[in-house]
Length: 328
Image (cartoon, rainbow, N blue to C red; front, side):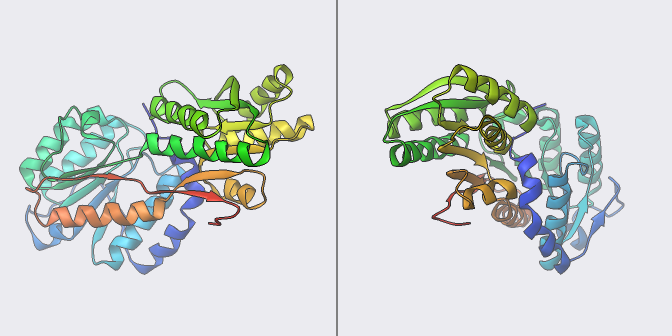
């Protein structure tokens, strides 16, 4: 199972969504329902199926969706697949086939497992909003009544690499040894993100040289591995980090070693990282804008519900480069 790396940092950036939830009502519901397809109620009902409610980011997002939807007059039924692709499929099929809801927003545990659901939803005139791209679901191109929401990993990587290059030029005279912290094999967007990071760094600061790569899984391992990397590369003063855990782990490693970390950039933007940016410890964070994405996703889905026969769209999660100068 591939899980986008933004899901963990989202837990800390969704606080504002929880405030929105006070505006409306709605609750976690069982998979099925008894309403007939095409009723007025189904036209104002949406099912939201995240990865699992035990993930803080998903729990927070579900509250935000219920609140935003309630404020707009929609009932939001929240399902909990609990990271089980078959349960997610079964629960969604029950709602779609019964006509309980006119639309479904799905963050797929395993996109390929939902290819059949897409066909059923199209037959039942139930609009869908799915994470990723059509090919993830075994589809070719855009589909009627289905919108896809993705992270632009190439743009994200370019922004992270450019930001590090700017820092190297500004603080290190254009020359630096760089520790490149990469994601584990199988992580969504790994190839696109890391290729763009390296290319953008090289274009922005040709004098910056990547001297070693460190694979990131969590902060503790990141700190341990960067500490080891520093022993072999004691002159490294810059870190190109793939996510929040990598960036924060590198800060811990340099602090423990008593060494100067002049430049570090990353993608994610949780609250701890943004504080480090404000304090000047991290030069830049390419932060995914989850509240803005929630709004555009919900609004796109409800617009499709009015006519599920029209082609859907490919939308992209908004992102923003945050530095100490730019603020949040």
